[in-house]
Every structure is written in structure tokens, then in C-alpha cells.
Length: 118
Image (cartoon, rainbow, N blue to C red):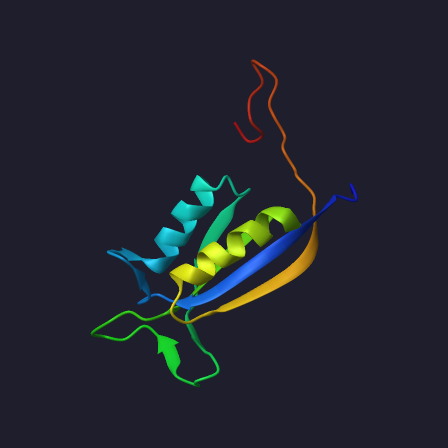
């Protein structure tokens, strides 16, 4: 396996009910990442969770307030540019930033080849 390149992983922990303007906060953050040409962002919805207030976030019959985690991978410099922008968009939440190694896997089929299983 290839060693990979150094990068940073930012995880943003928010609630599904968090908003930025007229949009869900997670949508606004992903849109801002694209505008800033950040390498990639993925939104994950959790089943249940809580933060420092110990308030449970989960799916209810009358409303949805599940935990949301946005995972963003890019260079340390790009995430340093992004952090204050996202922080300004948030009312409450948590950032977790880790050093990671990125290994990109990209297999392309030669012209005329069938994908495995075809």
C-alpha cells in the first residue's frame, strides 16, 4: 500500500436542526466548502448522540434532531482558511481536527474494457 500524503481531517459536530439563514447548517457548510475549493466534504447523520449539555439528539416522532457530522479532508492550510468561516456560521457545535495520511485510490478502465462483474 502506498504511504499517502499528509493531510488534515476536520469533523464538525452539529445537530440536524441547526440552520444558517434559510438552509440547514450542514448544507450551507458543504456549499461554502465547494465555493472555497476545499478537497471534499461528506455529511453523515447519526442515530443518536449528545454533547456537553447532555441533551439527547435523536429522531423523534414530531421532529428530527439527529446528530450530524461533516467530515472534511484537505491540507492543513486549506482547513485553517475554512475553520473561521465555518465557526462564524455556527451557533453551537464542535470541531475535531486530526492529522491524517491520504491515500487516493482511483482505478480507471481502459477504453473498451468492461467493469468487473459485467
